[in-house]
Length: 422
Image 1 (cartoon, helix red, strand yellow):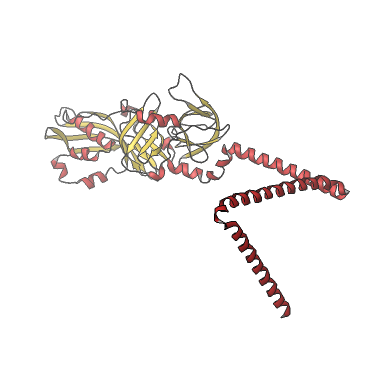
Image 2 (cartoon, helix red, strand yellow; image 1 turned 60 degrees about the vertical axis):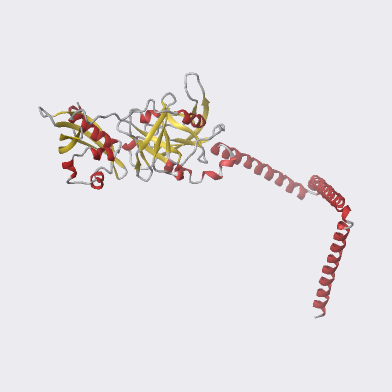
């Protein structure tokens, strides 16, 4: 017990002594009050200077000890040689790792943000599918999809197909034919898919870039193709309306309009064209600047007139299905036809139709109210496009100054020969 008593008294004495010294120090620092600011600055400078002097002396002592250490004996000398080589090895290893990460990620800061990059690109890349062409795209705003102009050229209503298989119909399309850029506006908003265009232009030599798109279009079922390559150069020419990024990525048909991003998912360009193992991408910041200037001047328009003739009414009917203007198509059904259907049942027949192409619509023989039609449909079934071909007649009736659909006799044509299309 004596030992514990002495230990307790010692601890109590030291705690009390420390508190007394601390109280005395604080009292000297605070009083008189008018000198407190001066004391605070003086004491701070004194202790900072004292710390720096001690640190410098410690470093100098360490250096002196390191210099002297190898000469204190053979054993020390051998240890010094070993640690020198170990230090050189670790330094070179660090340099190699740093160089590798810089080349693989463009910048050491991009090392940690590349996780799940491939999955993000696949999820955020969309298909653009029309009757005459296909490509890829990505959301630059919650209801705006960017793609190449040549993907939507001559397409009044290309569909935007999300990675989960759902497809959206454009409300409007704006573009710049000279820059080969277009923006598709949709009603449904998808903020989770947005990959915004950048406000600045930054590239690193040999930086790894990632391009995503639907290679070979709907001929291949499944996720978007994600390809990696290196930044080669930034190309500007008087012959080009926009600057291009050159990489060693090998773009193929169907990937046009998709995103080019760095390892962190920051958009760098728009997939545009590939040739002989290298590809060119429209630079993203330039694309951002062009968006406000885009117009519908060169965008294909829907121009139909169901009041002209039965064959024109049939064309209008299928064009409305193509554009998924279902209300307009439903209005072209006659009163007699509507006796056996309603809007929900009728639209449900066409829920998987991506596109309709009217190949022929002409007056049937010597009739006044019937049209003979040939058309094809592109249907989206289980993540894959299916083509179907049809021909037959539509009998029409004029109601309210418009020819409307009265009765059909349409049959599917399987494996049509090339003559069927002419």
